Image 1 (tube, rainbow, N blue to C red):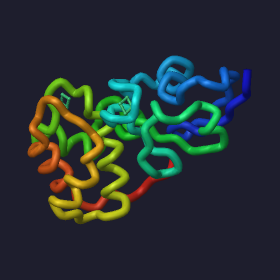
Image 2: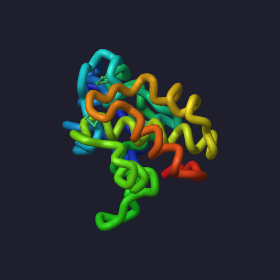
Image 3: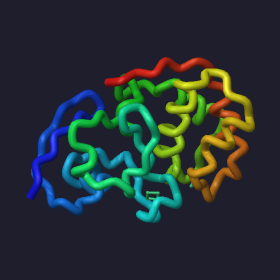
Amino acid sequence: MVDVTLTINGTTVSRSTTPRRLLSDFIREDLGYTGTHVGCEHGYCGACTILVDGEPARACLMLAVQADGLQLETVESLAPSPDALHEIQQAFQDNHGLQCGFCTPGMLMTAKALLADNATPTEEEVREQIAGNLCRCTGYSQIVDAILSVGPVVRETP
Ligand code: FES
Ligand code: FES
């Protein structure tokens, strides 16, 4: 077993884990942040996208031990309260940017990273940023519209 200490959504946690434990499984099953979805587990679908030190990363392609000492943000970090949505979440709702919702946590975190670096992206830039996040439902247009509608978002490191 290996000790891992990391910060997730502003809370520092320590756990013992096996050396080959995937970060996606560690987040969901050991830490209880089940908002991060797991689809392919091979780095293709983007459903497991979280932010690692502010940058999008596929949690299924990292080992938990590789996140030792790092700052993670999952979809649970977005909403300011149980009764309110983050402005990116609100934009997805307003623009019908989700149907089944399976891709949505990864899409939201990818969008947050884009908007933190580029508050006014072009449609082409949005499409390029979400190219690694697969959605089987929406046809992408509504997701692109949602992200374009958000406007400036300040990068927040919890
Ligand atoms: S579950 Fe990680 S990329 Fe598909
Ligand atoms: S909303 Fe169903 S996969 Fe994107």
